[in-house]
Image (cartoon, rainbow, N blue to C red):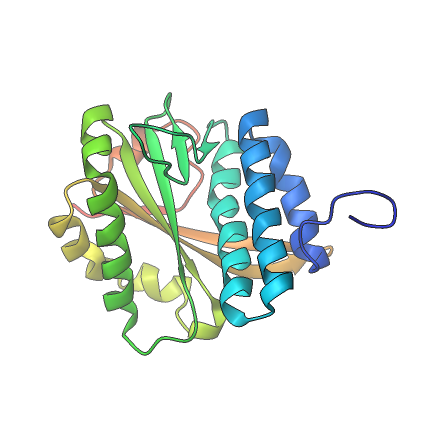
Length: 215
């Protein structure tokens, strides 16, 4: 806590402010689980003081970013709600959306597409039965760490390179790439680009992301 008694979610003041701005976008139950997740990660990072625990805290924070963007546009994603014995990152029963997150981060030597393919395939395998049973649209949000050198523009310009991922994973509906862009009045802004299996995103009211369909 700060000297004023206010909870501090991150020693990074911009991230702390961003989390506090995002939380009201979610239900009380989601807010409780989000607070616990980020505070547990913060405690682990403070205790261990190593890159792995710090990365864990960053990854949890990044899980919040695409979900808050959707909820600000009228969706109702819930954080880690139990469904059929599993807890996906985000669920919206009404919109039939399931969202999982992955951070494409510094520190590994394998190519971008190989790493993203492996991560998304693992998530598809984990949740495929739930997705099929409930007719969810399954989205994987991929955060592009700026130190990796992979840009949103590159994903947009060569978006058809992701077609084999959709061909290999029938339950995958869309891949949502996001990363930091500019800082506006002290607030970090984010850019988004989405690749969808087809043009079905066009019928979803208030869909907020630039999206290209693979048809």
